[in-house]
Every structure is written in structure tokens, then in C-alpha cells.
Image (tube, rainbow, N blue to C red; front, side, top):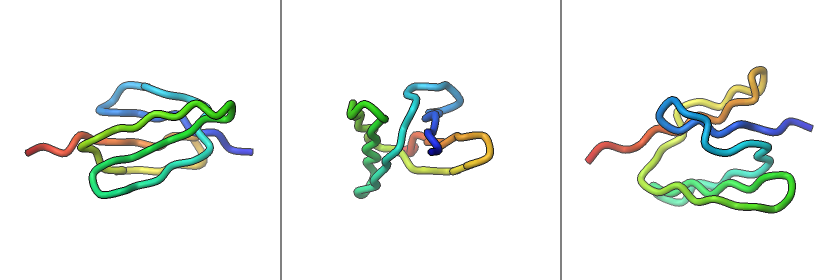
Length: 61
């Protein structure tokens, strides 16, 4: 299985992610043990299975 590291504005903020959902400007992610985090005012800029990275970037107002 492929678990992703969440990178937000260049920093690793969450790991072992197996689920991600985008709703408007909010991205909700869950890891393999069921913990979840919600990131607001962000967009997904990259998903790389080879390096297991899901990259988020803050949306500038």
C-alpha cells in the first residue's frame, strides 16, 4: 500500500496518509490508524506516488 506524507508550504505536517478529500478550499486527510486532519485555505499542487508526497499550498488572498 502507498501512504503519503503531507507537505504544506514546504514542511512535512502529517504522514501515513491513505485518504484525501477536497471540498472547496479545504483538504481533509486520514492516516492508516484513522487520525484525520483538516487543512483550510489550501490547494493540492502535487501528488507523487514515487516519492509518496501529497503537496499542499496555502491559497493567498
